Length: 81
Image (cartoon, rainbow, N blue to C red; front, top):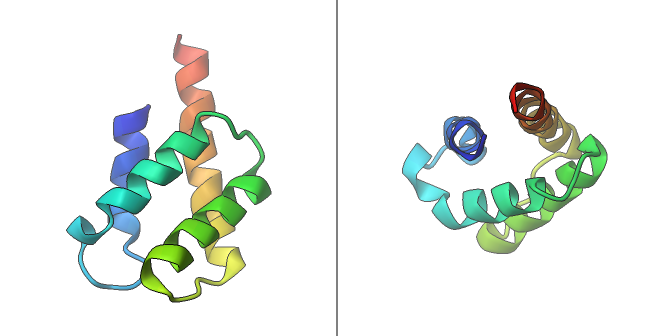
């Protein structure tokens, strides 16, 4: 599950600075994903993590969009196990 979540976040590239520029943020979001099942709550975390690191704001709707993808991966992994 973590590898799939990392791949989704790497491909996202919200600031168009290159996929390899978000290692810390990806780790923080994947760690938060472990304990969050609500897309809106995860979206808030995503927005805060990226804003803190890059001092740039990401529209909440874009964070919700990526959070749904991440939570889908999480629940898919739970069903497989």
